[in-house]
Image (cartoon, rainbow, N blue to C red; front, top):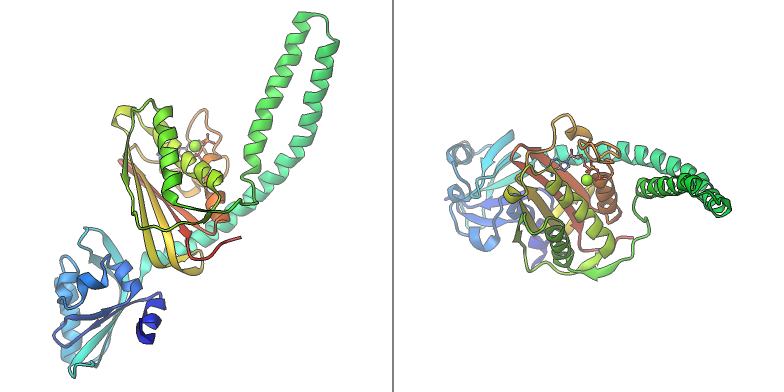
Length: 353
Ligand SMILES: Nc1ncnc2c1ncn2[C@@H]1O[C@H](COP(=O)(O)OP(=O)(O)OP(=O)(O)O)[C@@H](O)[C@H]1O
Ligand SMILES: [Mg+2]
């Protein structure tokens, strides 16, 4: 790879270079990710063929060529070949192309992605604060709870009356229940046991656990990118995170026979997680076809103790998000009736402490 293309590939903005007849002569890594294509597929192709419904897009390109002056537009909707619509800020600048014609330099910046980055950052801060308060409280409960349980055990040994022993059994059982809750409130172990791992091993493990829990009645569709390399992660904790997300999908389904979950893995280049740009990240989507997360819960669905289920503790997603954050990644959610999608991104290129 020469210096110019390696510089181009390091830029988080999508850069598209067109020659005077509007054929693609370069598209950097961010541009390929944004337009969901590869260099091999788009080089030499007419700009019109990069998108569906490309009439307006073509109009803007031709207008810049004809007027020979740059043009910027905000939040333009582009339809990819997959049918997905993306919103981008576009700057089109005419420039002398290497082939002698007047070419175009097109800069593409994803708008929703930027919005999501800033929202994710502020939400993360708010949730980390409430988690810290809850963790503090959990610690305070844990010690006296141990004392209560120990005293009930001693008392049980002293009691000859079987009827009275029943009371101590209740104290011990309820103390154990509270201890389990407190352990979950304390959240995941913050010390990660990192080992090189293929994410599909985690996904496959959870898939078999969920299938067994649901008596094989749910349909789980796998759509894996087999080229994903191994990267350092904490196997047990990632299993916990994925399990919490998938279990919710099964629990939300009104009829398990109709419940379908898609597990999808992809690699993504030049991707920002939080505020850090990563060269390579692993993206996993967990998509179910259930009723969706109730609208009133959605803004706070990752916050601890937010639940829509009568017997829920509201900790599953909070724990899943903490685990993903500990790995330097991010967890997002999008939900409407018929489709709920949890997406997590994990940086692959550097070991994260
Ligand atoms: N895939 C989903 N489909 C529909 N609703 C969901 C889905 N995932 C989460 N939810 C909603 O979000 C709420 C919060 O989920 P979370 O896993 O954090 O807690 P919980 O499942 O209620 O309790 P816990 O996981 O601690 O047992 C759920 O109660 C449910 O209402
Ligand atoms: Mg849950």
